[in-house]
Length: 609
Image (tube, rainbow, N blue to C red):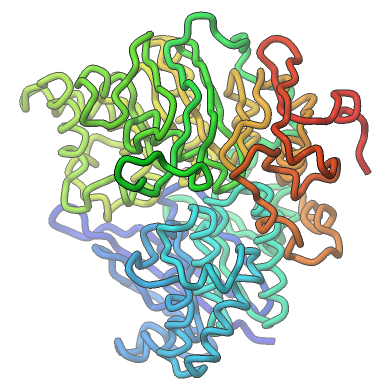
């Protein structure tokens, strides 16, 4: 069978200064029906630029300068604007790296999924609504009928990414371009969504380009891997062959940077980890939600996103928050930063209670606690040059004069692995990973004591992420910077965190030293998380999922946040009827290791079928 997509000698140029510079150098790729071809490489390697050529699309400030793109026999680059628009969505669909930036906040989820079906006149209004609900169910989203009527901002980051996948699949395209589609997903959701995508591609006899920094995920879904570096193809071949026996030195470097829990020899950062006696930061019995309470009334308990959270951090400590999307990790970070006022409880810095809102905190308190968000597209002003964004922090916190700012900006960009010339660029001229490094540099400009890291490595490739992690360690050792590290990447958490707090449905279910959590997880939910981390081998997903249905029957519907009982009881194989509806007791295992469960430690530590 002939190639569905054939890219031949494609060159792409980007505007730099007063001229044009080639960023993709004569690339040739052929993709056949049913194939899933992964594009891997560092940020700026040209992965997304090359993949978008399948849609005849070039990003702002770039142009096609040579070569051809043929899709299903059609010369894509020769099409006029209307013909390209007809191609997109119907025949070739794109899943963006940042769902939060791609989804329209003013249109309901159901209408956004149905839109392509209506535009391309594939289904009636009723048929489009039914297709939307079916896709939401396929991708394991809760209560599809109700969710279809909600807006994107009323869902978690992981749910938004699955909604984007549903939109792309709505018209049954022949080719999917998946740009980091599982970046925002927790590990338990990730394996279900990967299986759903894999099955949908097979059922529709479609093909896919899968762009990812997560090589363990690539191993589960790709039939073939193409390695790009600085706009050139350096290696390609069957996925298992590339993973087992990479030939190019650069491919070997990418694979060597991958961390998977079974291969970690030294778990934890090796800096102790018992709860501090004199914490620099304390969260004391915090509860918070997003609904506004009625005048003069407290926020109702059933609307709380986080409940009864207490944490303590030592100076220079790395405390990781892990758990599924919607577990409350980012909400807790926003409370600590003052971006969301706590409904109950306090955040304490060096013994002083912080104002619940940013406006109630001093400039010095704001400087000492910085946050780096998951999505740099939302955090950086698209109309502001990179140097201006970083320079504003220098001026605000330290009054740094303009003449002195340029040198410091260059130093900060160098710290995160970017050239000083990037100070003159705008955010849309950078890749996702480059934008995230800018956001990190801006946080470092304040010389904080604590950085709240909200999935801030998710947009970075393995090589750059390793460099940023080393930078974090260096700043911790030299300047005593501490981190609240929110991540779905448990392999990285196992490597860098001193302690780990496991959250589920807005509560902490287990907390302790990293080594204790990963070597001997006690809570059933902690065990589930760790078992769901992909391994760097091509048969792991099928082995883990087996022949069970893609949609876990009790997965999302059974999340129970309000009320006194264990929030995990609806999914727990060890749940005790009539008992787990009560508040679970704290079990103290020593050295600050606690879990909240009605079962005994002996029962929890016994092998489960």
